[in-house]
Image 1 (cartoon, rainbow, N blue to C red):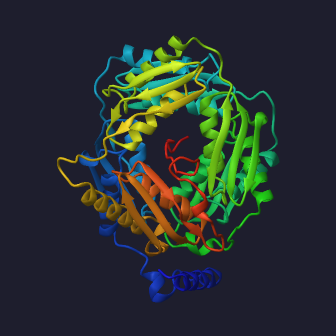
Image 2 (cartoon, rainbow, N blue to C red):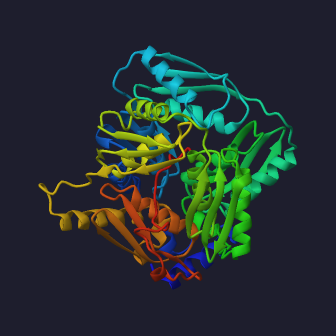
Image 3 (spheres, one colour):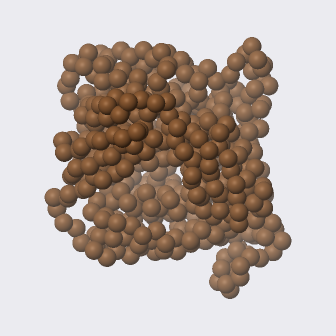
Amino acid sequence: MKRETRRRILWVSAIALLLGVAFVGESFAAEKVSDSMVTLNIEEALGNDARVDSSEVTVSVKRGIATLSGNVASIAAKKYADLETTKINGVLGVINEIRVAPIWRSDADVRNAVRRRILNSAVIHSEDIKVASSDGKVTLSGTVSAWNERREAVLLASEVRGVKEVVDNISTKWVKKRSDQEIKNDAVAKLARDVYLGSLPITVAVKKGVVTLSGTVGSVFEKNRAYDAVRSISHVRGLKNKLEVEYWQDYATRTKRPVPSDSDLKKAVREELKMDSRVNASGIKVRVSYGSVTLSGTVDNHKQKKVAEQDANNVVGVVWVSNKLFARADQRANWIVRDDVAFNLDTDATTEGFDLGVKVKDGVVTLSGSVNNWYERSHAGDVASRVTGVKDVINRIDVDFYNPAVVRREHYSAQVAKAIRRGLKANWSTRWVADSIRVTVDNGIATLTGEVDTWYQRSEAADVAYTTKGVWEVKNKLAVEDYDYEWDDYDFYNGPYAYHYGYGWWD
């Protein structure tokens, strides 16, 4: 779609909103897709996603409501199937009836694995978390002092091999009090900074710590992301998500085209880090130059280093992040750290069964071995980063992303590039600019060039590419309209500018 056409749609759509018209013009009405096409797009998205084995997943769509059923081997696969479905153009809601059917493990083994993961976690400091397991259903209870500890405990439990379901009965007990106005101010600011949610017409109300979100968004993904963003704010006791999804609204309602100055971007990144309860931002320094953010200074552990980088990437206007943070982790014997990392990898639903090597020296973990795709490789690094005492992770795990005995490399790369292009056309946000994005794939490295209209389209295009089977690296050279980059000055292979995916959607 050419820039002039996209601008015309924006202008006409804005007029339609003011007049209360449901849709305008043939070009705009044509964006609505049939349930059968939505079904096909979901099936293809799940089939191309390295995180989901969709061979036993069934998809049905009725009036834009997608129902997922069947079996997957882990809770993570179920959640990622849900996540990718929310991103498909035309999906107005998701009913996730997928059943988690992992390899059987005794309740004692499951319970002990969850307990040990919580005990060796660099994020969880509370000692009052209790773990129970019955037929693969894990129940967590007790009290923590921060929301991030509660979220981390649920995440750790959900990743353990043999877990079918996690029931979160943990309560959060805050030491200090906050007013409803303080919570509202944080929620409004966080939504405005978010690369996906900025400029959307979302209204926030707070009463006795319970937040209510109302307004209109263009996808279920945005609705869920808004929920997750606000729920993580300190002292939020509950959340009512009344956001309505209109498949065409998203593009039309974004009236702002932010091109933040370096000073504005620096302030936004600082605020995002300060608000994230998972990160001790007191020792972090932020520098910004023409959309490039450099993080330096110290954090408490390697997990915080990764979270800080993701926080910066989530801010609208950030083109890339150079992470020079140093983790001042608790000193632990190398053999103890190695034992904990190896245990977590061996009991993890994603990495179990792979022959992965773990070496530790002065708190620096080096991983080796071979896995089948980028997600397994990235997840292994993330599992290691959460262990107490880890200062850094050197991930030398190989990815066997294609079999040269079965298919020629050139043909395989062409097929992967084609799958990415189809994914861009089916996605709720990138469909508007899919024809303006050029995709090439070489040896598992996807390069995106061209121009998009918004920051969230740039970010989502990279996600579409990265979640495609056969890709382990993305060079995101996409420019945002009215914001030029001098890409020739940057080393995507060895510098900090290569796009690395590796965070669960709940992180």
